[in-house]
Structures are given as structure tokens and as C-alpha cells.
Image (tube, rainbow, N blue to C red; front, side, top):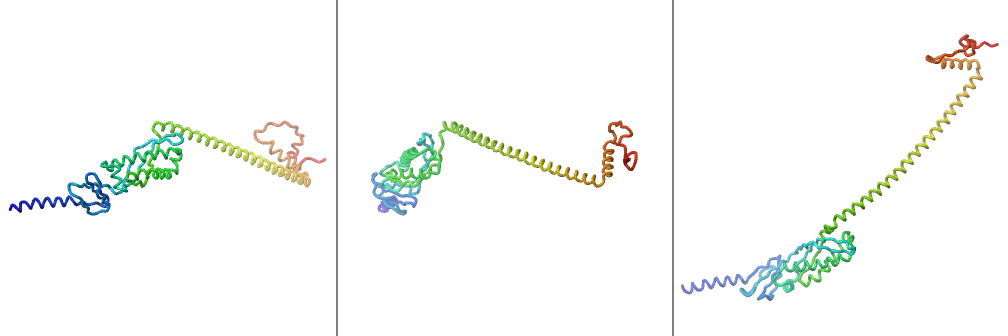
Length: 292
């Protein structure tokens, strides 16, 4: 009984020591075995690992690609037009041994803060050499690549690999927004006034051309009408002349009938003529005026 009572606790202790000497490394992480703060083993492959219980500790680090959002920073491009830049980076822990030596027990949070300082410095340096128009244009992609390349060397000293840097948003400082808005508004109003002036000028040209065309068309139509009217009068006179030459008596009769029709209308003024007047010759006789 005494032997059994002694062996049972000893077996439990051995089992606990054996269990605490084994650790599992997930495929999403890397692990370091430390002994009194000194690195003993690096475990980068997933699976089982071993350590000395009570003496050695296991520190795990994320092996996935990590994201880091930078706090908005103010930069001054070469044209002295201040901008507020909001950026983020993607990175991973590439060398856990160097990472541990660089950041110590602070781990990933300390490394992230130091990476923030590196990225802020590179962002200010790169964006300070170009104009604000370059930052807001399609050259933005090249600028982000330049920031990333500049941060890579410094991040390697922390055991980090900078994969990508992106500028999410680039804005003017709040105190400059109203002034910029008013300037843009004034520019757009000036452009609108220029467009309206050019439109009015073009409209005036179109109206003047239309008025000129109307005058030319009316004048040409009147000229053609006068020519046609003159030709018609000439043709009428020719016909009258031929008719008069062919039968003078009939022509006199026709002219007298026309005169009677025009003068003897209801409402006409009263005519006072001598009964012997030639005007009444065809009223006195159906044969016309008497011939001597």
C-alpha cells in the first residue's frame, strides 16, 4: 500500500511533466523555445515540439499576413499645399529570431508601433518631394511603391517583411477646406461665365446670319415677283395691243363696259356729266358711238 501510494503521485507528476514538455505549433504561427529569455529552438513548421518543463517557455508569433492602419498624418508636398494622408500596410514576421531580439518581450504590439514610425517617416519623405497634384494623380501607385521599398530595409532589422503600403485617403486639412472650396467655386463660376459669353456670341452670329439670310431670300423673292409681274404686265399689254389692232370697235366697247362696271356701283359718288358726253355713247345705242 505504501508503495502504491508513492508511485501514484509520482506517475501523475511524470505525466504532467511529460505533457508540459510537449507543445503544438499551428500552421498559422511560428514558435520560439526560450530558456531564461534566451532563444533555444525555433519551430517554424507546424506539428509537435518539445521543451524542458519548468525551465523553458514557448512564445508564439503569428505567421500570417498582418494589417496595420496608420493614424492620419499631415504631409507637406513640394508645393507647400498641406495634405492629411491616411494609409495602411500589410506585413508579416519573416525572421522570428531577429524579431524577438529586436522587440524583446513586447511582441507584436511593440513591433507594430515601431513599424508605424518607419512608415510615417517614409511617407513624409516620399510625399514631400512631389507636388500635391502628383499625389492625387495616377502617379499615386508609383509613390506607394516607393514608400514600401523605402520601408523594407528598415523593417528587415525588426524581422518584418513589408508586403504592401496603400494610401487610403488624401484630404486637405479641415482649416483649408473652406478656402479651397471657395477657390474652386470661383473658378467654376468663371468658367461658366466664359461658356455663357461664348454661347451668347455664337448665338448672336447665328441670329445675324439668319436675319441676313431672311433679308436675302425676301429680296430675291420680291425681285423675282417684280420680274414676273413686269413680264405679266408686258404680256397683258401685248395682248391688249393685238386685240385693239385686230378689232378697235370691240376694244372700245370692252373698255366702256369696264368703265361702266367700275363707276356705276352702289355707294359710288354722284357724277354730274352732260348727257352728250362720250361716256354715255354705249348707253344711248347698242351699236356704239355714231360715226360721222
